Length: 88
Image 1 (cartoon, rainbow, N blue to C red):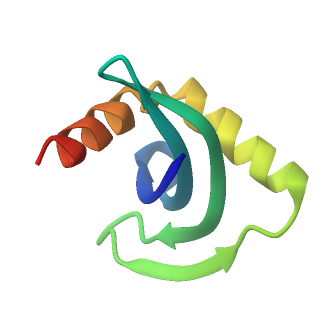
Image 2: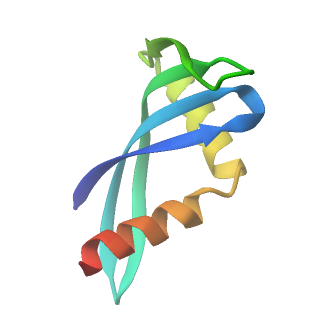
């Protein structure tokens, strides 16, 4: 199993969420085992500049952010990014 860190730009909520992603490669496909949100950075609506960052410490917070990430359908993009990185 391998781990990388990636970021989700949640434009709807003006935030960026940093995740640790554990994955394996099976039959030339990436299989994500777990998503662990680590940090949330809130962004200015006008300039998109970071306003403040907070760590994600509770299991409920991690579950909430991971579920929101999965619902955003960005997980397919993360799988493609991982695959492209490993192909290099």
